[in-house]
Image 1 (tube, rainbow, N blue to C red):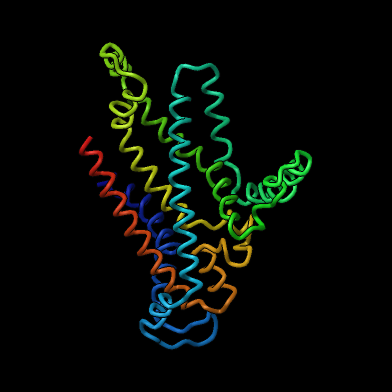
Image 2: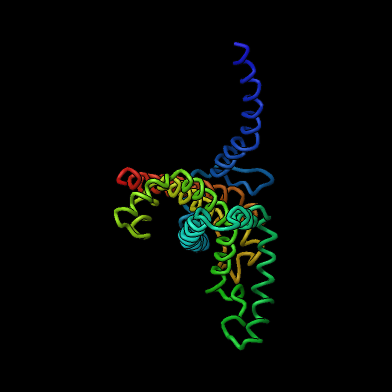
Length: 286
């Protein structure tokens, strides 16, 4: 009984803090999504009007399209690169522990700082190099092009996100016994066959975790866009998170953007569940 009291004494404060700073604000947001509150002053109930307006909002639609495009491309690219790096770092090479530390460094840096640095690189450093080399492609600041700005954000997100995904893949790779590869080599299996028949099936749970977490994180992209493009040029790189923030805290649309946030939360949950079902089915098949 004394142990239970100790555990409760530890858990209850944490639960209280979680409720105060997470659950209660979330419930407040859901409540205000059914009102016309602007973030100040009085308010009135408007029912599901805000939710209906979200589906009619062309700006929100464009933000959803951009966010999905960004999240899908970045999730795929970051997982491919992370898996390749993890396989390389798991092999018997010199300085692999040092290389692991180097690859993890980008993840511990501030996203905003990284965004500002790459903003300078894309806006000044690369164009100067392109001018010297006579390259029209490098001479152009892609962050100023509505059609290419999102690619710059993808590059930065991948550069930083690779570290965490690589760490998870390494955790999976170290669980694979070398005996499996030795037996496969005796049977005449090549590198590609070993990967698809041994490596990938064995790290399938880690692949599932990485895919779900990556998609969820990139669907909520915010800091990179604030630091690099501010949602521009125009509204070409405005994500849902940025739209909700701007409309809710700067545009007097607190209730409306609260409804938008609720809709987006549901969308992320649905996407995550679909991912888990599909990827878990693949794990079972393997």
